[in-house]
Image (cartoon, rainbow, N blue to C red; front, side, top):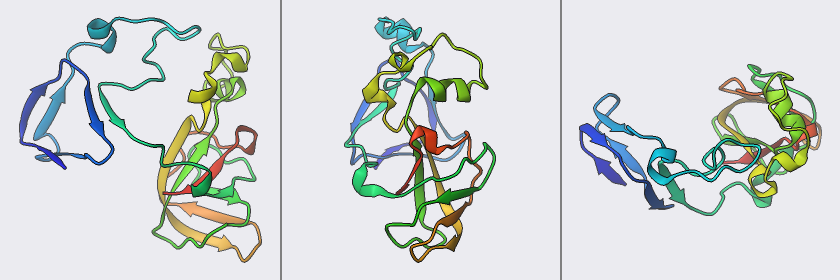
Length: 182
């Protein structure tokens, strides 16, 4: 871990770390990182249509170089029923591994033009088809991490997972929603 002592630090260039580095501060409101300028002001901008900035889906001021920890081998269930933003319950296919309350999971959804419309409550953002989203960046574009609070069903049957935290977005099998072990 890289320890940053209490204080206020002005950051004027990107911080890039390897995956084995974590940042630790002196505590909430004790160690403060300030970013007085935007990435565009410091590095310029080459817009990627239809986005207004190349930084919309790219790394920000702090970036960890790492292999994606969410992949086919970490998938443990598909989400089988729609769950609304704010819900803590997920209906999933039979689990491929054992989960117990307290385990961490990641809920993922792939990007698509339909997902963009859903996230914007049906308002067209200028994106009219799947070409609006970079196919590489679209993979598992939405991620949400939570502990499992409870599990019902199982033993080869459909399962309901109760999460400790409410979903920050609508979840649907139409967008490739999947649960991964974290």
